[in-house]
Image (cartoon, rainbow, N blue to C red; front, side, top):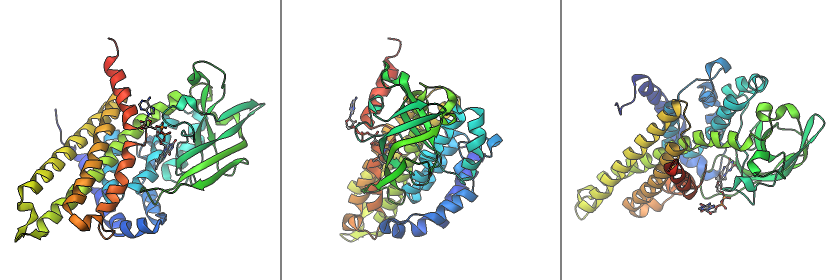
Length: 383
Ligand SMILES: Cc1cc2nc3c(=O)[nH]c(=O)nc-3n(C[C@H](O)[C@H](O)[C@H](O)COP(=O)(O)OP(=O)(O)OC[C@H]3O[C@@H](n4cnc5c(N)ncnc54)[C@H](O)[C@@H]3O)c2cc1C
């Protein structure tokens, strides 16, 4: 058993780290506060092939394992988590197309998705259904060689750039159980009846857009049914969310590590009562707890990624990693803010951004309570 990264993984981590130091860190605070879209960073990530992280080499991707994906998301999130968001739903949707698409669909979309010429996302959530995906109301009726989609999706990250956008719909809304009538349709930008209607204001996760999307008699070719067979949509989406949870766990580790790094530096520099504050035992307790939790979260994330890399379903492992790491991100961001005193609350320090970005990790790709139910169901299997 080896808990260290391989030489190859270390080299990959070091190259991502230097990209983040050069291209992301210097602009993160200013661009985030300005709500500016990080176009230049996206262009650099295209050049580095990051948009192909979950795509096999045969389709022009990096063909990386999920441990590498976790490294990528951790390192980027140490600099600015929202940048990882631009890659996040794209990467999980690419993996979904790899796993579930027909050969023709893979040929049509994957090569350009791998280079970032095309980008994608995942449209599951609706105004009245998030955790309960079987309760979605978006429907798609077959009309000759097309499907006609009607409904609204919300909170869709990367909605303005996704082309195609995978949309979870009910192709047979009357069937029981509901999941047997659910499918994923790939909607291309510019399709009449498809409109991004609103950018949703957010506490954090600024830089990448989260949108409401309306489908008003939006007609897509029947060829755009993911996998070519109706009724597979929920299964396809849940398989993709497993990758998504590993990337959220890794982003959480990145936030937590950045919060810890900032606290370690600050408490060494800041003096009170005639000495650096890191000499106080109360401060040391926090520092020790943070470091321990970050490392535990990282190892759990790598473990979940390794299990998923074997090709087995890793719902429980990725759920445990995302649950634990996201709570660590929230705790570390708050503790780092406490250790920074008043400066932690200032927009001139990065800790306030970490504090605003961390809670999303407990919501996205399944809330932590939903994950607890998934973990428990897996543990109780076979009883
Ligand atoms: C910034 C941001 C970006 C997002 N990006 C995307 C995206 O790209 N694509 C996408 O499809 N969605 C996206 N989402 C949506 C996100 O996945 C959902 O918000 C999340 O799944 C929760 O769904 P909900 O908001 O409808 O909450 P609800 O499902 O209404 O849950 C509300 C509360 O009830 C609890 N709850 C519900 N059911 C149960 C249960 N059975 N047992 C215990 N507790 C339960 C939940 O844990 C939660 O605490 C994004 C959300 C945010 C905030």
